[in-house]
Length: 140
Image 1 (cartoon, rainbow, N blue to C red):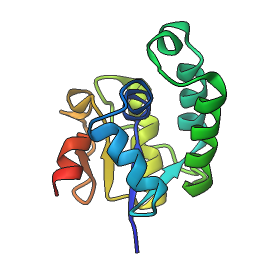
Image 2 (image 1 turned 120 degrees about the vertical axis):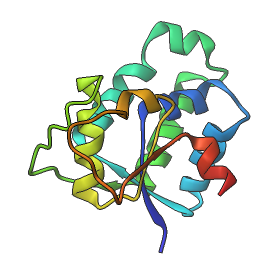
Image 3 (image 1 turned 180 degrees about the vertical axis):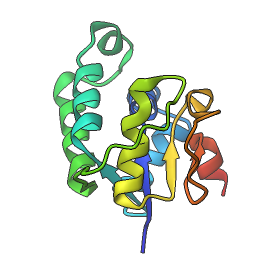
């Protein structure tokens, strides 16, 4: 059974911009079924919003059609999770609370993010949830 993972927008966007590296490799492994990505309303909305930004499109070697196809492929392997209970871990960046909520609702083992510091010093701790950078996941 694949390990359940929440892929932060920072990781997905970095995978779009760079054709190499751990972000792209993690997305590839999700598409191959090695990891089970979890998706929810807030995360999907964030993905859609950020991938349409002009500064992201300017850095991305993919066309808009290719970006849409990659997002559709990623969504096809993602498990949609409904969040019924809102946890408020009071993260440094309150906008990241939805990632914790998604991970807990979907019983994820990992949140993959480039912004580890945003998750430090939370008021609520979840000992069975690891928050790591993609390179740590790829190395393990």
